[in-house]
Image 1 (spheres, rainbow, N blue to C red):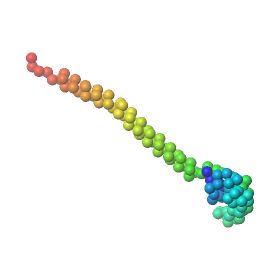
Image 2 (image 1 turned 180 degrees about the vertical axis):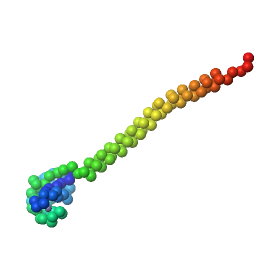
Image 3 (image 1 turned 90 degrees about the vertical axis):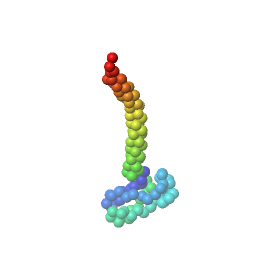
Length: 111
Ligand SMILES: [Zn+2]
């Protein structure tokens, strides 16, 4: 989550540097009304805490996506490996069986 507001002059988004997780917390930290300098146009804007809104931080969302992707990929690899072993062992046994059967049947001694 990040806190943003819009500049009165250029309407661009301004990020608020704060760790506050609620409006009262932000008000306690900065006061109910505080000045923000727009990094885009340099305009000083007086903002009320009610003008500040919280939005999802793309970095955190991307980080979460990345983590879930890695976890999914890891689990998939493990499950895939388990699947390969489960299918592979009977196949291997069957292959060895048929090889010995073939070897047995192929060899004929003279009567
Ligand atoms: Zn501005």
